[in-house]
Amino acid sequence: MLDLQKEFIKFQENIKLDDENQKLRDKRDILLKKLKNTISDDAASYSTFNQGSYAMGTGIYPEDEDYDIDVGIKFNIDKDDYSDPLEPKMWVKDALDGHTKKVEVRRSCVTVTYQENGESAYHVDFAIYAADNADEKMYIAKGKTYSDDEHRYWEVSDPQGLIKAIKNKYSGDDALQFRRVIRYMKKWKSHNFSSNGDSAPTGIALTILAYDGGFSINKKYDWATGKYIYDDFSALCNLVYNIKKRFSYSWSSEAGQMCHTMSLSLPVEPYNDLFVKMTDKQMENFYQKINKMLEKLNEVKGKTKRSEACTILVELFGEDFPVTVDKSMVGTSESA
Amino acid sequence: MEYEVRAESFRLEINENVYQRFSAYIESYNYNVESGGILVGILDPSHNSIIITDITEPFDRDRQTRYGFHRMEKGHQEKMDQLWEQSDFKKTYLGEWHTHKQKRPCPSNIDIKNWIKISKKNIHNSQRLFFIIVGTEEIGVWMVVHDMVKKLEVVEN
Ligand SMILES: [Zn+2]
View 1: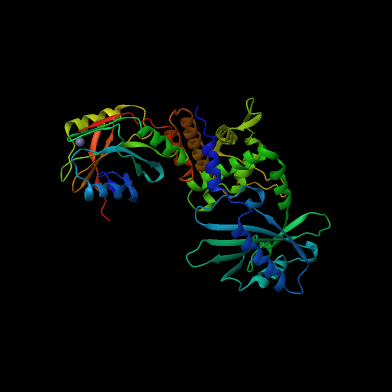
View 2: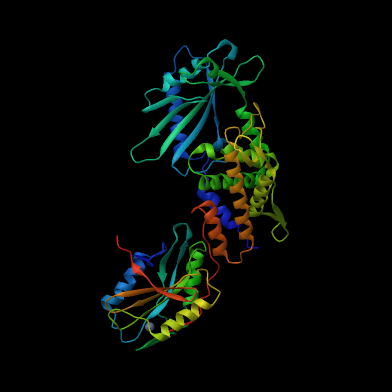
């Protein structure tokens, strides 16, 4: 088998987007400053934290150039004092209103969208939490402006616990391999599913599939250098194989056919099923794509030419995967 | 410059610097003896294309005659290795080029045999190999894949 570790490392460098990205930090910091300066005196005190994939170290460049920055705002309030969760959401919305053309209250956050002429789009999602509750848990404010009471509620949530769980699962160089392999899966997803988000597994679902037993470290000790040599390709093959095994095959009355489906719980509160938004048919489609991926990865294993192995990986991941070649033998040539 | 095979979606791109080298031959070469070298470039499977980024030119050791160009390994191999390393191992051998004292170049029987012989060796990184003949007014580009020789056409924009 070819050693493709250099290619995977380069691939990861090409797709990786993290919290150190200055442009994203700038957008976020400007908004946080604006919030601080303009928030109403009636609003409770708050603190902020980064959430989402950048905070977990699993972010990738979005294929559609729509950057998504996630910020948590923890108000020092007891949810029981605010029967309408829209109230604290509006503190944030009103403070940021007018900063860009689009500031909206969405179901789970307040979203500020930037779209500068000809530039990439950015949106910053502010998730609003009540952080000073009797049960010492955190609650996220759910609901939109015109939602009826039933769709306005506080939901128990532990975004920081989730980040901690992902970040602490492994340490040192092992943690880097864990995050790299998650990034490969996320890139595979964005390259193989249409941009309609509902039909694809979410980034967090792919992350938890790796976190929850799918992934294991693949490295071996090199006596010559006294260092561990990581094998991302084998770790990825193993993860994809484990994801495939996790599906169960049964009759779906919803789809009227046999389907491969699974459920997967968030490892922290509220322990919700991460595939709940996907229909059985969409799950079947996810399974077929995982199966196809496994076939392609197995095909790569059989290749002896680097260019052919890389060509298959480009099919799976897109052009961010580098196409390297073996040393060329030019021979001689006789023209007339 | 971009080339295509009729009725195929494949594209061959020749980088500007390479194209300019060929143009320089057309402009100022005397064609008293034939010149030639190898074609070097990168594979771009996501766009179903190949890009010629570099060429080598005759070394002293190569045999240049009125009606022939016999390219040796030495010199060209070292240049190829250097390009390979400098490109993070992306650049590969892609074929051959040589000159003809002909306005619109046309491959000789020896040329065709040579091209097929080269492409039959199962050592290449690219299944498609390219052969360019630089004439006194035009250049001609051919592709050999699975022993088939196909002429490439300039893509009209
Ligand atoms: Zn010839």
